[in-house]
Every structure is written in C-alpha cells, then in structure tokens.
Image (cartoon, rainbow, N blue to C red):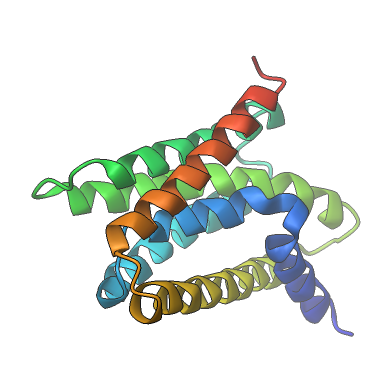
Length: 190
C-alpha cells in the first residue's frame, strides 16, 4: 500500500468512525434545513465547509495555527448547536449568503479538530504534503458517503413515507441540538 493510499484510508476511516460522530452530526444537521430539490444549495454549503476545514487542517498540521484542543472540543459542539437552532428559525431574505460564510467558519473549527489526530500521524513523515492531501481527500470521500446515506434516508422518509419536510427538519435539528448539548455539558472546558 502506498503512502497516499494509507492516508486516504485513514482520512476516510476517521470521518466515518462512529466514535468521532460530532462531524457526522454536524453534516446531518447542516443538511436538515434543505429539501431534496435544494441539493445545489447543500453542495455549496458542504463545499464551503470543506474549504474551511481543509484550510485549518493544513495550517494546523504545518504548525502555522495552534489552538488548544480543549477550546476546539468545546467549539465543535457549539457549531452543531448553532446550526440546529438556525434550522428552525425562519429564513429571511439574503440570509443564505450569510449561512455560506458561517458554514465556512464552522469548517475552520472542525478542521482544527481533525488536525490533532493528523499531527500525531504525521510526526514521523518527512514530507507532509502528500499525506495531508490524501487524508483530506479521504475525509471528503467519507463525507460524500454520509451525504449519500442522508439523502437516501430523506428520500425514503419524505417521498415514500410522506413525512412532511418541516417535521423531518425539526426532528434532525432537535436530535443534533440534544447531542451537541450533551457534548457541551460533558466538555471539560467549563
């Protein structure tokens, strides 16, 4: 197995690992506010998120940016909580652009969470560009799997079982809110 393939697999496994579910919950809550006919908006959001976490993943791994992990571990569930709350607020005209910017900023925070794991792995590598690229591509591949599963479940729930999308959005956002609240309470940052 090549170095690239090894880090690609590690990135993929890291994102779909159920023990690191906070990122999965964020992506699900982020998508909950959108219906199937708004997939383009979701793809723009996910791209903004990807740009954000790719940037801080690189900057942190290269030791250009450093934020204590306890602060990052507090900020990640806070982003989930804020996204869940924003899903149930009425969308005002012009707010969509703001949501893209906020999602990019939240991606910056989530990238810091990935970077601690990656720094440990890269400690023994002399050239980190290839592993960093491969790890990030693995994260993105895992994120695509999460999105595909989400939209399949959304399709079944809304189109086949005839659950109204506003109930779906409220359920997913409420679940994300509850999970993030538990993570915030359990966080040792307090």
